Amino acid sequence: MFYIVLSNSQDKISLSYRLNQSQVTDIWSKMIVKVKPKDIRPNSTPWRGIAKDWDTKIHELENLIDQMNLWIPEKIQTKWNHKDDNESLNRLHIHFPELEKTEKDANRLMQLFYYNDLIHEIQSLHNIRVRGKESMQLFICPESHLVEKVDIPETCYKEFCHQFCFGDLFLHYCHIGRHPFEIFTANDVDCPTDQIIPQNSIYTYFSLKFFEFNFDYDKFKRFYHESKLKWPYSLNDDKLAFGYIKMGQLDTVDDKRFFNRDRVYERVRNSDKVLSWGIY
Image 1 (tube, rainbow, N blue to C red):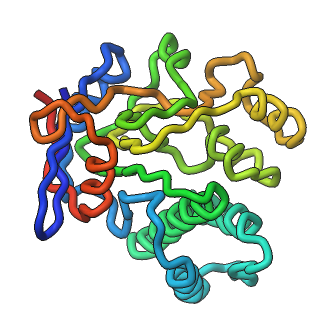
Image 2: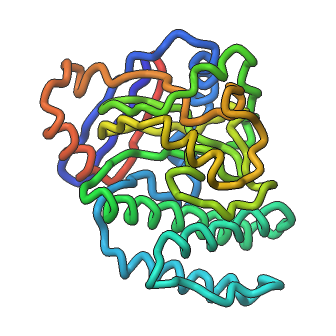
């Protein structure tokens, strides 16, 4: 079992997940106990898919771009295209992998990761606008020199899935680039070939889903061909790694079987801190 405790100033909620029996889950379980909430990447906002002030986030991103342009060799000339939000997200995302792969300065790298996290947070706000409803999930990205990435076992690529249920626990993407599921959902037909990186490693990153998502895979198959992108694997190759690997399912809330999804959603949504997690 995996547990995680969230809180705000008035409430604390403990979520326990029954873990799947798989090599991926076993490897991740040994990693996650080596890190703590204090190791979550600075400026990363775990709570995603929750309605927030759109204009404030755009302004925050544009201010950050101004700061980055003080040292970026080729300046980001166009910030946000208010006539096409999706174009802005896809265009601006490209700069992060380009700059991160050569940057060595710790402060600049921190700005770059902040930039990337902001873009993904705004992407989640854009999805709310498109779908007309929240799709809350927690993306938790703890990092530590004590943990190294481990290759996904060859036999485990078949575990990638693209259907989400309320209460699912997933291994999260841990590379610098874009994986097929993200490229498709962002409708990114201009993603540079060297930035198309299907997931091939296990790391401490994980996500908790608090919504349902039933995906029509035929839509991706059409996108795969019509996008004209140079994909690294064929559609029938499991290493295309479309989606995420599920590792567990919510079992109890505060040591009791959970039944009221709306109440769980409300309490998780209103929390703002990750207090602890562990395996038992």
